[in-house]
Amino acid sequence: MAFNQKILLTAVITFAFAALIFGHIWISIILSATTWLLLYKIIPAYIWKSNRIAARAVFEALKINALGKEWVGKRSEVVLVKDINKLDGVEVLAKTIEGSWFIVEIYINNKGEGNLKKLHEINTKAAKTILKEVPKIHERYFRDDKGK
Image (cartoon, rainbow, N blue to C red):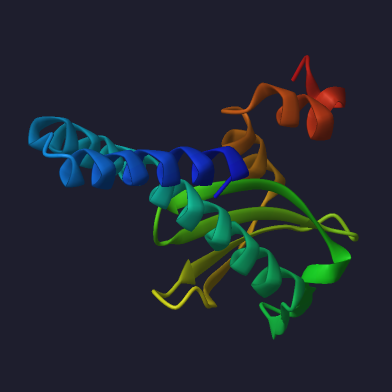
């Protein structure tokens, strides 16, 4: 939660209590509703940020021998991170130093701990298809293939 958001939330709660103490019930109700609306916006953003941090830790700790290769997160470049669901986890598209593409699905539990659920090796054509949704990233990795 950003510093400004904390100050705003604290101020609204303080004024809601002050209005209640001084007998302004309707003002207190309106400020309380405002508090809930602020929390409705702030909490998912906070969870999203903590999920990204947990997913990054899981990806960097990745070291698996599967599909005939060794997949090491620290020796791979994260190309794209997509939310599976804002609160559940992320899908990471990455490229190894050797040029292999893979997708890692990382789910985050309610304690904020990340778990690797799936690892898929994909071919370059599939990576191109996925990255067409994000033109800047697609151009960065496949700029030589413009005419193809």
